[in-house]
Length: 299
Image (cartoon, rainbow, N blue to C red):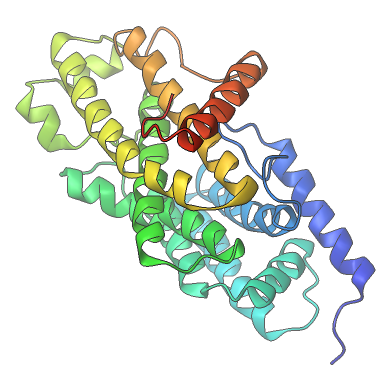
């Protein structure tokens, strides 16, 4: 069987980049900060994960239908490695990326297992259970980006895992109200009981003192993970370093805004917008200047 022609592959990557641009995200996705050679590969990764996530979350499908869609997506994933020319452009690009960058398919399988869990699990008893979900829903993305960049280093993997988990948790606290409306709660029930918070208050969108303490506690743990994730922002080279630093700073800024609003997740949702871009860029460049000058702390 002959492989796809170069024009088909370029068109497949262009479709993945279009999908990436079409979705709003808080944190950079295949942005101009990334090295140009990485952008198509990261866009293919994003298109695969974004579509699968939509299967789990969007539309009016039943749980069984969502699981069937994810099963089919996993079948296509494994088939795109074996076939030279998948019909779906996402998998044409992804299969090319997996082969060219020697990516472990097990990391993609981990992502799909987390998306299935979103359909079947809506409460978490313990913090370790939440972290295990993040291990599969977020950490594979960081490891895949590192491998696309050519890094295969256990130290970088550990720091990347901390950063990706911190970003996933930040998104949970940012979307706390939205998730509850969908019947999901990512705060561990152990924390809820320890602070004597009541789930029924969330139905009334009442942020009691107990819920203040719960959210303050999980935000503090999230900040600790961001600290663990700072190392990868300093050890990678080139433009990826700036991309990761901007991502780190963006996530911390969301946490800062949540704290400034006294963890009121019901009145307004903390976000980043176009107006934040100049400040994030300046702080990213300032971080680099401080590192060159021997300072350890991020701005």
